[in-house]
Structures are given as structure tokens and as C-alpha cells.
Length: 321
Image (cartoon, rainbow, N blue to C red; front, side, top):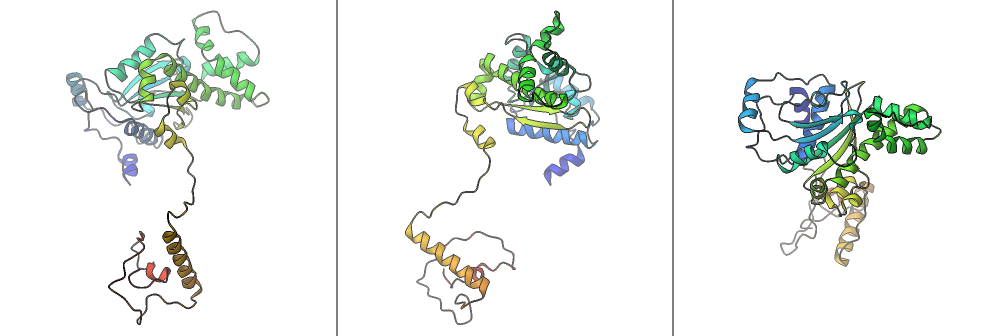
């Protein structure tokens, strides 16, 4: 219900996050971005900006919830599709959401937000129909070189993702190759961030910093969250327990009883439930059932309080059990 309220009511306009507030936990920051994008896709974003927001940020400083590396494409406006206001996001944009080499102003800017502004979340966003990704994939397929200018430098940073996509989906249509190249290009940028920034790498290793990727769909405004880098633990050189817990698929496991007494109790409960289902020789709760004050319960049962689920009858148990 709380999430539905956020979707319907929009972002709270009376809340201004400044440097005087505590840092935003990465999970809370990520939730804000997910919900903000859902508001945007439902047409509920873009609340009116009040002057006191700007005055508070100017007077008390900024405390962005997330660093976002996005593409410079004018059809992918980061603050708008996350439905955020000034002070919420520390945005870095380059064509193709690329990081040139492993050094320079872009990584330094991200490190500033993390080390000084105490931001705990980094999001790398690519987008569908990206011109830079499309040009690179087409060049790779045609076995052509990159242009000998600054635009060629940008495309060269996408080459590895394009080559992997074309190799993996060699017989697939161009549309599928572009989709995979876009995702791999996001992972490439994440890899460079972790490899070339000690601040980012150490933050992830200590599990104080979260780094995730997403693909923005310029046709409907939605985001496809691709999660963390699949080799994140190897890159940062650390076992990330919380990361494993988030990424591991859920599986049901039957745990064996810890003692012979527990096994006997489980057998009794199963037998009692079978009698209840078959209505065969019930000997649990009834008018003539005996009860001894010396009997101690052997089972703690946690369940619904619904009157239509009488657990004593369901397990055909006697008083005191």
C-alpha cells in the first residue's frame, strides 16, 4: 500500500534533502529511483518545484541519493525519468554512457560524490536505440574501423561490448544484437568504475556502496534493471555476502529434524492431519477429551488466527499438546 501511495501521490514536495541530513542508505536510494520511474511512466511525475527547495540546497548544501552515469542522448533525461528534484541525483552524462580509458574527470566526479557527499548508490543507465551503440555494432559487423576523431574515441570505448554481442548472437537480427550490446556496454562501464577507482572498489567491497545498471526504454519511459555486474566479487576481490543473498535464486529446502523427539512430533502431526482429512478415528479435541495439568506443550505453531482454520482439529491434537 505504501508503494501504491507513492505512485499515486507523487514525490513529497515538502521534503528537501540537504547536507545536514544523514546519508541515504543504498537500498532506500534504489527504491526511490524505482518508484520515481514508475510514477514517470504512469504520467504522475514532474511535481512543481518550490523556491524553498532551491534556497535550502543553496544554504545547506547537497546530499544526492545516487550517482547516475547516463547517456548524453537528449531523449534520455535522467532527472526526469526518475522523477527527481534538484539535489536528489549527481548526474554524469557522456555519449553511450562510456568511460574513456580508466581515468579523468568522470571517475573523479563520481568519487567526489561518494567520498565527500556520502552518496551510497551508483546507477549506470544505457537506453534503447542508442546511436553510439548502434554505430559501433554496425561498424563491427561490417569489419570497419572507428572514425579518426573524438567521436571515434567514444565508439572505441563501446567496441568490446559490440564485438561480444555480435560474436554471441552471430546469426541473430541486428535488433537483438543491439539489445545485448547495450547491456554489455553498461557492464563495461561498471567494470571500469570498479577497476580504476579505489574509492568505488573499496566501497563495494565493504558493502557500503551499491553499483547497479539499468536500460531506459525511450519508447515507453520504463527501466529494465539489469542488477550488479555479474563478476562483481571477482573484480573487487572480496566475498560479498549481501550481494550473494540478493542475487541467489530462492529455493525451498527440507531441513531434517534436529532430534529424534522432533521427528516423532512431526510424525504425530502428519498422522493427525491425515485423520482429520479422512475423518477417520479422530481422538483429539472433543467433549470427553482428558486434560492433564502435568502435560507440557511439545509444539509451537505459528499460523493464521482465522476461525476457519482450527489448528487443534487440523492436526487432531489433544489438549495440552
